[in-house]
Length: 477
DNA sequence: ATGTCC
Image 1 (cartoon, rainbow, N blue to C red):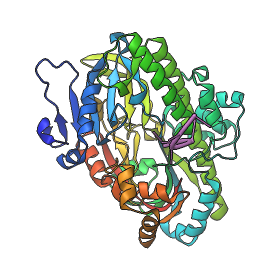
Image 2 (image 1 turned 180 degrees about the vertical axis):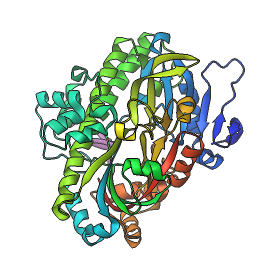
Image 3 (image 1 turned 90 degrees about the horizontal axis):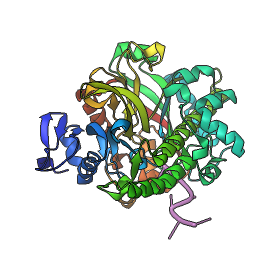
């Protein structure tokens, strides 16, 4: 990104000056000079376009891990007020609705794990269905799938995939209100009927990780984390169903925008007023997509427990937290000095409530919401905690991952999957992948440095680092 | 991300 187009507010906060006559909300980009410089100019163009959408309130923002996406940048955040003609956009949520990370803590230390690592890797690879179009053991009738879309992780626990305690540590207690299965197309449901409890492909993964470093002892204690401990991170979303909802509603919202003569700065920003029929339908379908993803990660949690207990009997595997990073949620915030309900698009961005928020599980409430930043394969991941300053700065939002630095195509040109797996093995990381090409696309160096993203997230006042996780086993689609 | 072009 060309930094000369930006105005520096402080080392971690940048804005774009308004051109004469230009009408839009303020744009704020969070991140260091180095991170911003490595971003595509498209990120700036896209977030400036978002700032022009009807009914936007507050600022259009990008997180330190932002990169070029469909319509909205990934790492883009924007809130809209329905009472001011605010819109909802499928491109502002992302195709993989409610893609997110579930983190599980175990009672194992790295030393406990080491003798079993290869066998556990094989067992996880066998147990966790993954890959493009890959189906699992669970086949659902249309009726049963509707129950998934209404019930989310609650449905999964009811069916025996996990324990009620898991639900307490999932956003929305595992079930998103306002899901309307009737607004999800037959096609979307057809694609999902065999895909519940599957990991998918692309940047999705299941990693067994060790807590390498604790930054904040008090928060780590509250989260049940200690140095040397084994944890598991599951990164996946709403699979074929979410993707199909995105495809369906992109068209429907584009038609609505045309009918209502909404002046779109970019065709990819197809949107409709929150209060319009199309907007209303998308919200019902999107919430169903969120429940699909929450149920999916809940089933994968159950499968992970099974694999651990088969190889290392008696292992405790508890849900630390589950965050979504592709959503649009109705939340109460003070904007322009007034409390109001707004619809916040967080695309490749994580909700990050500071201490005391009632939606944080009791156990963590005085500390803040856990924030999970997934790293690229073979590097590291971070657990952070929400802070007070994030509300005013970014409507309680933080980064979600490392963010791509190279496109998939560029990555494929540079590496082969085989060499990446060998390189990681030499560093003690066991990779079990369904696709060698997928591994090349996800090569560690195709991503930004996650350490810099986590550091910038903290210094920008969005969330504080609690623990650094290093991968030991990585299962990929 | 994605039954990576029904």
